[in-house]
Amino acid sequence: PTKSVAEVASCPDPEGELAKSKLDGVIGFQRLALATEAACTVCGKKLARGSEACRGVREESGPRVLLGPRCTLVPGSSE
Image 1 (spheres, rainbow, N blue to C red):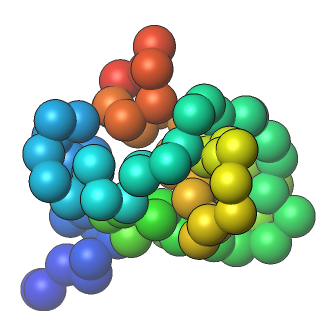
Image 2 (cartoon, rainbow, N blue to C red):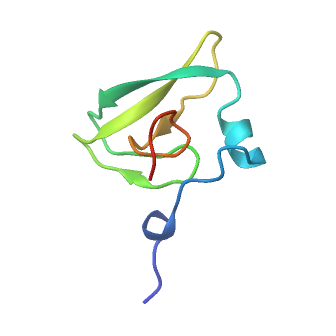
């Protein structure tokens, strides 16, 4: 059977262009419990309602950034 994007998604290289472009302007991360289902901004992995996620914090306005709690793009985490 074919796997969905969420099943095969993995964290990208933190130094890669995809990660740098998605995280442009993010100065830190804040952990939170999700009130609704969401998806990782970078890899598309499903983040279930009630699960922990990391919200990218910016000094200036910009697109929403949500990452899984163990994403390699969150400093101090690994997936």
